[in-house]
Amino acid sequence: MDHGWSLFHFTKWLNDHDHDFLVFLHRSRTLSHIMREMIQTERDYVKSLQFIIENYIPEVMRDDIPQSLRGKRNVIFGNLEKIYEFHSQFFLSELEQIERRPFHICYCFLQHVRLVTHD
Image (cartoon, rainbow, N blue to C red; front, side):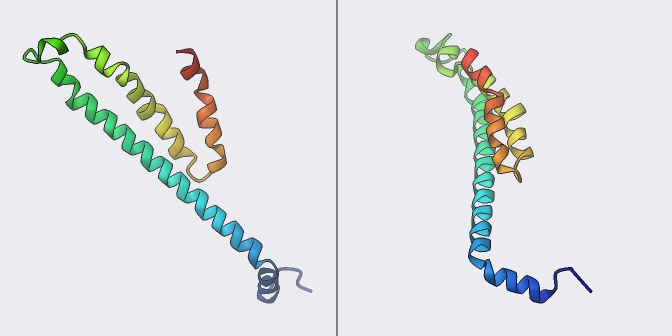
């Protein structure tokens, strides 16, 4: 006697639980979409920071800028390089590693709370 799932049993189970299954699929797709969007947003953010560092900071370092901007690099850009370093070297790769495990996202944030609150 075969105790495995036959196509009949699976179809019956699916019909009996189709609403629950559809809700599960919808939530799963929604979480996947959210994770993909979050990761893409983080990639875009890292690229934007890199662009600013490569293109705008050198402009402020030029000799021919207005006197009022000379020596104001830190006032204008603050710790932008540190922010870029954190996001490009740590946070983005951590998000990419948990893309298929969306409930682990909290660990990405909690792991770095000390850095944000104590620096």
